Length: 86
Image (cartoon, rainbow, N blue to C red; front, side):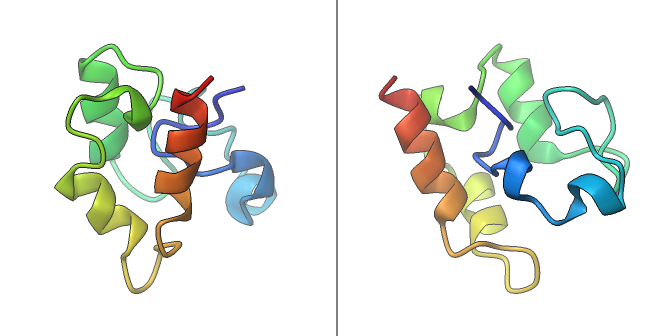
């Protein structure tokens, strides 16, 4: 099951309960801002997740994955690769 556009596993996310977040595939606006550029990009291309994109992993996704404060050292990129192989 695809849990997010960028590869984050929402079922393991610490914000799921505390922010009442049901994941980007189920919401229009993230709890942390007006929009998520990764979600917008993916959905504008009619993709389920970033791993389906021809320019995967793009610079935008890479910036999110390796962000010093909110990044996950590329874990989400690896998850998108797994989803793309299904």
